[in-house]
Length: 117
Image (cartoon, rainbow, N blue to C red; front, side, top):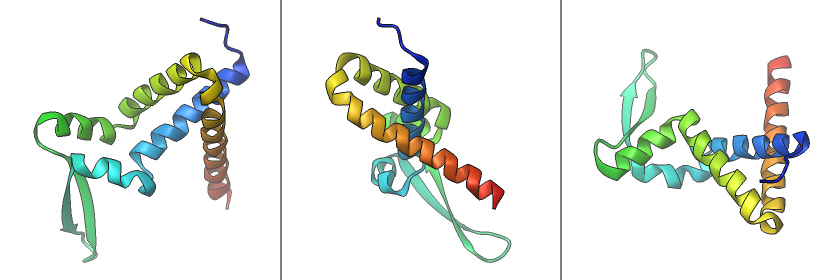
């Protein structure tokens, strides 16, 4: 394995962070999560409808539902994918990893800005 510089490690970490958030939270990838969750609608104390997603109850759909509902679990698999992609396909992975890393940094900056305002 090659020596990874701090900048490369930071880039891989940010890309992994962004891919994880993309899979677990973002609306654009909801279609990936939908087959693995049951949707439960409940009324809260204010009389508003709230939707909860719980993993399917059995089989492979439950496994993936549990995986996608756990940020830490999905993060491990995202990191494995990002690092493997980087090591085995460096020419193709560079632009994708860079885009994910920049998006990850942007989301961190946005979070900080939102906390200040």
